[in-house]
Image (cartoon, rainbow, N blue to C red; front, side, top):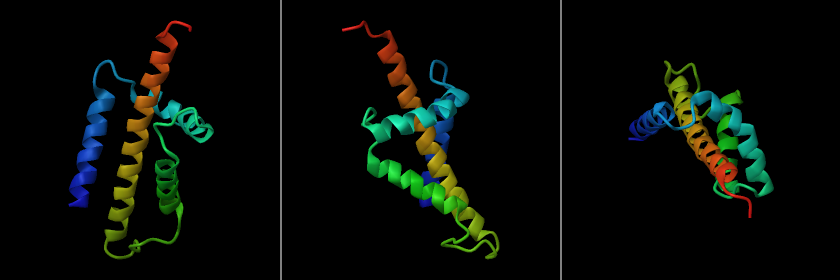
Length: 112
């Protein structure tokens, strides 16, 4: 069930990134550091600290030599890493797309 959910989320992110009028892949990738900085400073409350912590845990899980499922178990260990990777990229790309759209709206808004 979780694999299907991750695959669906990955497909949704891909469809969103390639939809005309939405921020493209490179725009989203370049926005990630700005988005994280804004979230940490409180300027982007849409990305809560809890979700940011989950994303950081995902990165740590991917780079950690210790795995829930070891890689030597006939490829199963790679599958769990790939699932975390799909979730992480889907979350980052989706959220950074929202962040870029927010930046664009803010730049178009008349000064108050």
